[in-house]
Image: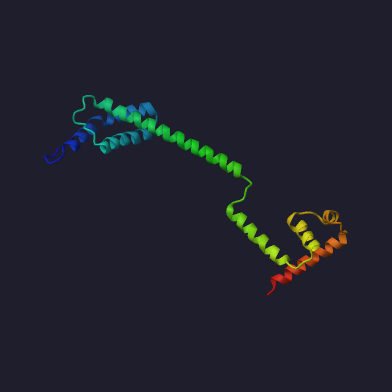
Length: 172
């Protein structure tokens, strides 16, 4: 120890040098994992450093260190529990939203529908309905004919008219 070293730093240095090995071994036995024990040992000394508690007058340094380490273990367990709950909730939310479209996909779809509506402007109502039922709702021509009270041939004619109209509205 140098003569200019502050008393707190000297006390921490002594505490670390004298008890680091013991705390590491104690935590390794308690946790069953050398890496976690090493991390928690460092976290214990870091907490003591950050707290700037008086370590010079400790009568039972090992009890102090083990209590600090136990508190860190409890904090770590709480964090893991919160993280696990968050991940579980996130998975449930993702599962609930499965099949739902993202806001970007919804916007793209709405823009496409607006564009289609613009292209279909000026068409007779039944021609427009036939187009929507066929291309957007996925009905076949026979079902469209039954729904609109038209023959299959008229439905085909309306679909061709709608496609030609859309094609003309796309060309400048």
